[in-house]
Length: 323
Image 1 (cartoon, rainbow, N blue to C red):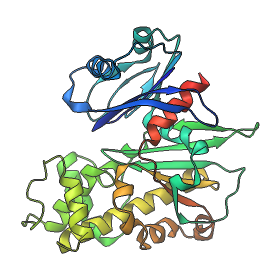
Image 2 (cartoon, helix red, strand yellow; image 1 turned 180 degrees about the vertical axis):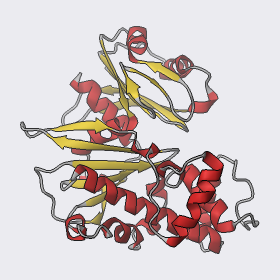
Image 3 (tube, rainbow, N blue to C red; image 1 turned 45 degrees about the vertical axis):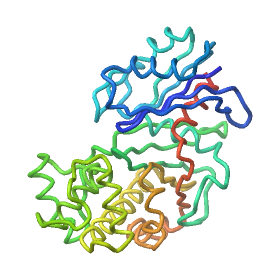
């Protein structure tokens, strides 16, 4: 058996998989609220209880929302410490690896089925080019897939979500001082993430009351903002979502240029699946393409939304199978 995990700031998915072709087959998957556990070992305890059977594990791979160094990581937005060797030893697996969560997501790209993707821009894929993945959720992650000479793909993690935010419009320039006052600096994740959507809500409401979202500290606040925007119940929420989608498209275009992702850009994360009407109305792709003098180049890059909600877990299982 293979043990795979997708450890995020909001929830942790753990699953037991069997080897399969073209991809591993899930036998049991369980979800846990990450912040409700003091130690990662406590999540593992809960998983073992939920599986309710003895596990013989050949390999372990977990995607984690934070930088991985020496097979260890500390989750950026939660603070849990995770070590691959300790997890491997617990389950008797000789092979164990931690990946950045976007590295895991990128690993799954080549085994996704056509119905697990939705195209925002068909483009003309250059199969010798790179691919890139960007995903907004609790935070913002980015990774790219480098094409290697043997025809495969080498996933490369980044921490680009914490790079500086580049304002493009007058409204975004007005936003930056608010972010600097609140955080000390303006970074991409403060605009393109669940927390980023709340920052945009604060900005567009300018301290005024919102008829839909009264508590921005509530766990479901980002979802309520997007629902109010999509349902036309609050014009300020609608502006916040428009700014979010435009900034998301622009940053996806930046990633495409930085990595020369001429084989495709993939949009992951839970937010994208929940705001599909806002992604498909043209604002995302308009911002993605606004890259003069290279607008024609990015207009030829395929752009897809990943519909598989467990893609990070799947990518970790693929990695475990390769181990």
